[in-house]
Length: 609
Image 1 (cartoon, rainbow, N blue to C red):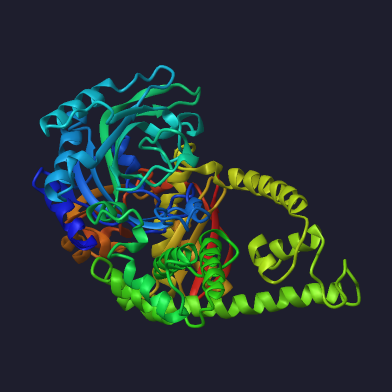
Image 2: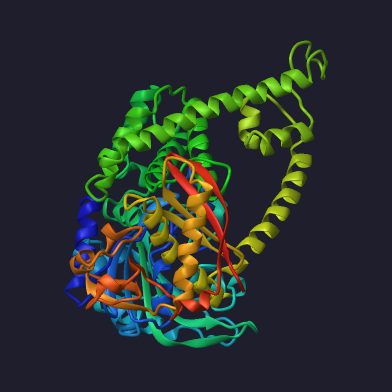
């Protein structure tokens, strides 16, 4: 059974149970300043989990491309990847535990053919005034007994650290307004011996490799308030996520996901390119595989390597992937990229169309990285020229922690990369500098993202609506071939990216600003309608990712309507939310523009408070 077949079975299974397939949301989220990448299937659905009606109804299913930057340093073991596909199904105030858990059990055992004897589950033990999930335990007992299996020893209670889900993590880490809830996870047992270094007794959350989580049903029914208390959401939701890569590992009974049919051709390409074996170099090859796969998808999303935000993550992935590739004595990455696109094209055909772009991004970054390494070596050689350190008579082997940190902050080299150049340094002193640096960065990020959707919705909503006016005004002035490529909104400013291969002259910027302010002055009505996607395109709706929508879409009109689309100033595919009249935006001001490379510009703007 292939990864593509598992996807098809999942979608078909839930469509037969009244679910509508929804689109794969962009990997780089639109208008969400709280996160750099889509990291879960539920992330684009937060407004609907909080009660807003979804265009497709109350039962939804999809497969979502996800990326989790926090897993970069974990990549290298037999189960973690930074990029993955998440199979999902949702109930928005419809069914709940007694339907969800039996359905998932049926999907695993009947559709995927897994033995129920291989399955173990975990449930929520409770947190403060949120009760222990005895209902899920009862349901699981019945399911195992129905399969002729004694449930004793198969159901485990864990704390909120393991069996609670929200975008921010466990309950105490959640910001005000964030939805979350207890979950019930399913684990697959592999035929491997327990490693005693992880404890005397093995259990589903043991890290020895005997168990792997393959699916998580979140019962999204709580919202955190400003005082730290939890209240019931207006509706009880189910948010299920199952990692495709891990489900495939279970189907193939292969506890190393990089040896499944999804990855083994890519790994084989690395073996052929480097002349090394996976058996003796598994960690290095896993990192190369994971990081280049993730980099390919991020580059295909229009991100370019840089020292900021998504671009920084992409640069880190490429360079860490290259570090491990070079350790394998690899020379040419193109054959690996070709295999990645070949392997994923059945489910992500657009990678074929964007292959040259993907290859160009990675090869250009490789050249830039080689120059960086050369410049870093020149910096050290120049600074230490003629100096003798230790017993060395020539060159430098040991550098100060200050200089090592300069290589990190100025040249972008990690401690591992610095050491790969042949330099040693006081790692404890370096770690202290790193800690102080990260604390400063963390405070900056908190300030930057303080305007997140959950905390200051009104200010963010105003900015979101302004991007629709800005998008259309840019097209009015620069031409209909210009379109949005990204945006980011905080309480302090609006950031808007668009395709344009030259600097926007001052007169054009002024005209764009004047048009937006004129539309604000006209106090145009803003409303949405749920339309068949083809009809929406016929009335001229535009959007950042319009080709990913399914049979119905949410269309926002600024002025006009479907009956008189010619009277609308702006018609866009968008999930919302927005203000009801443009007059609430008060006044719009363009602050500056930037060239962000690859034929794209960026405008920074702000609204009056």
